[in-house]
Length: 109
Length: 131
Image 1 (cartoon, chains in turn green, red):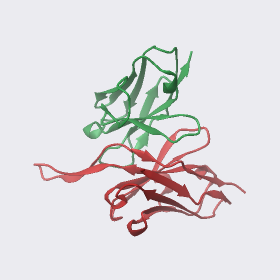
Image 2 (tube, rainbow over the protein chains, first blue to last red; image 1 turned 30 degrees about the horizontal axis):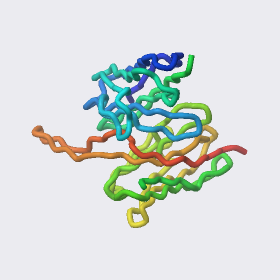
Image 3 (cartoon, rainbow over the protein chains, first blue to last red; image 1 turned 180 degrees about the vertical axis):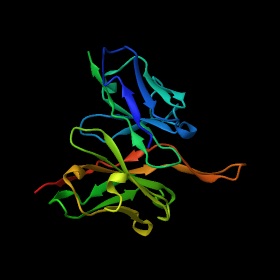
Image 4 (tube, each protein chain N blue to C red; image 1 turned 180 degrees about the horizontal axis):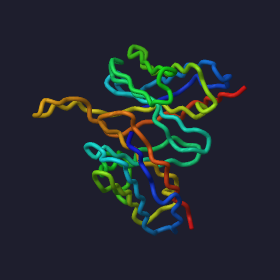
């Protein structure tokens, strides 16, 4: 099983600042099958990034994903009010089980 | 509109059973892998199970193997999760979700499915296991 460790646990930032979220895997993620999800209270997760760096439909270009192998990053440039949420990474490689990281909360400073 | 609507959740005693349903609409259900993901109160996301388009392949997280069964009825555009021998730790919000995929066959002779994350989620149905 691939264990995903996200850091930091909480990120306190101001509007307009840049957010950098990390997701580290215990072993290499095949084909960069790594996704990022945004979840707001009382809502289901929303796909933000898949394939480590591809933006999902409707996701603004201030969101970007990078990385490969075991180290992945989600970057949000110029935080807007609607970006404050919990973000989860997930590996969905060719073998199971799929796993999620424990989440990073991006909160308003 | 692409939509997934879960139902069937509720309060059940430890050791009991429950069957969750998920009604899909707005997309060609039979062409997609589907998945169940759960979220315990105040906790993170946990992948539970996947099922292939025709139901011929099913995969589970170890903690539910032998107790949960994922299935689908493509004629009814519906996904199911039969849960037995429920435990307190199964208490969670259960999401039904869609998994885009593409079949690959490479030059080395290996083949299978490559996925693109989980792109459509339902609102979830709550399962509470308590006496």
